[in-house]
Length: 184
Image 1: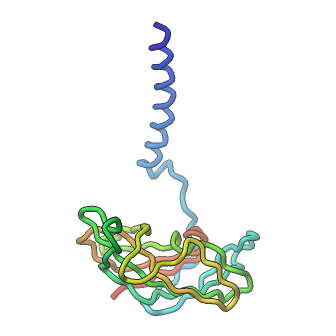
Image 2 (image 1 turned 90 degrees about the vertical axis):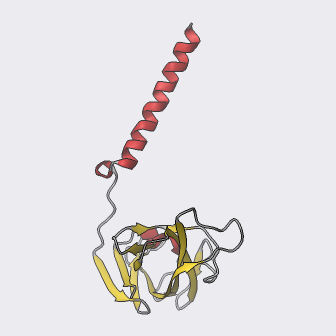
Image 3 (image 1 turned 45 degrees about the vertical axis):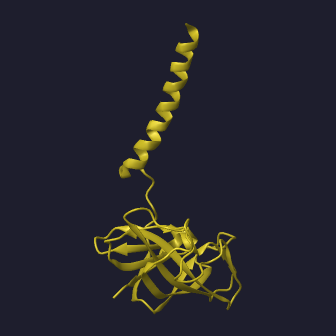
């Protein structure tokens, strides 16, 4: 008789913890707000923007990258049978060019600072896929002063979504300096 009571008590404690996490995920009012950008630069695809962020020592605005969205590929194909989007989605890709124009080294994953925006205003985070639009960035990109690197970042979007914008910020998207490219 004691075992079922103990099992029920443990289950109640575990479910209570899970419930609060699920409530936080579904309730934006209880989620931690993201920092508000202090500067948003709006440009067209093909234009270069200099963005700032914190370097590894925590120095705010010491990291400086010239970032250019070179190309937006609205639909691209994955390499192989396991590189396919889910049903109702397609892969889109954005070719970025990053150049370190600051006095401190860039050592980060550029993927997490990117988002694409559709005509309805919905934003989409990157996904992990290898596509025919070109090679992606390595997991970590290291750029000394003056060095540049190009790569594609892949997104899974609904088949009917029209991509109208690309956003990017350093420090995995948490830097307060952000760029928005309009797709024409």
